[in-house]
Amino acid sequence: QVQLVESGGGLVEAGGSLRLSCAASGSIVSIDVMGWYRRSPGKQRELVAKIYSGGSTNYADSVKDRFTISRDNAKNTVYLQMNSLKPEDTAVYSCNSHMVVRGTYGYLDYWGQGTQVTVSS
Image (cartoon, rainbow, N blue to C red; front, top):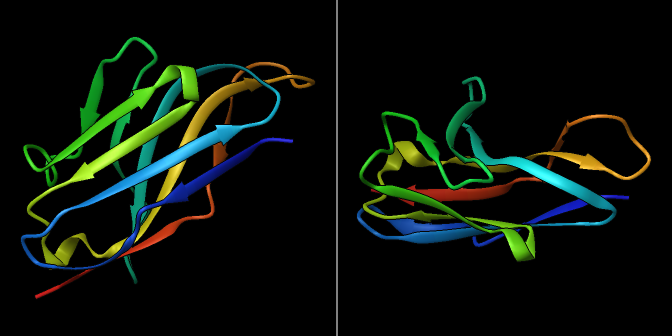
């Protein structure tokens, strides 16, 4: 069984910072991409940032220069440092891991349960 456990969400004032963490555990063989997505009420889920096993990254235009994604491959953990937060960043943030799990075939997507981030104005 595989788990992705997120932490670090909460309530913060505009201009503040939060750091999200997501640790993958279980019978993991290999992890390719890890990323963060978010969903606001009435909106579709959107990619926030992702990071490949080699370290290359992609960001949504709305978070560039404010958010930084990183990962610790030894710990199967991905982080999202969020600075200069805005009220429009309010959403449920979910961790995604594209990985091979023992007993399955090929790379599949696994998701965390989500963590609420609320930015007050």
